[in-house]
Image 1: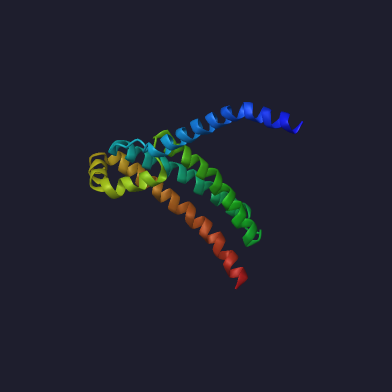
Image 2: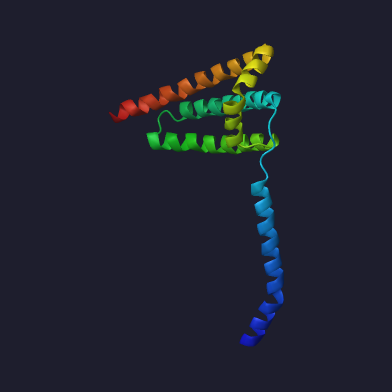
Length: 156
């Protein structure tokens, strides 16, 4: 029986070895291939899209905070983290739709900030939209902070 098991394993071992080599090579290729470079226009559009997503996230966080005003600080924090996780996944999908990553997105502004500012100067409607969305995020974040502060005051 033991010999049969070893013999059978020996028959399948080449397939396993081949599969693991192929998988290893594919992973090496995926890791080695850099994310597709964004254009300035794509970067600015993605920035607007991400800001719009942030508005939805912070609006939901404000709703959760208001619904959980009487909950403990830990319960509220947990509920807010659940919202954050949902939107984190959506944010990752958004980066992927532009064939980029968060890190590459952040690097883009460091390396091409002047071109981005120039593009936004030449496209004031987009800049105004981003500013408006940013203001909305700030307003919802203040609502969440206000509820969180009441939790801090209750502890002190």
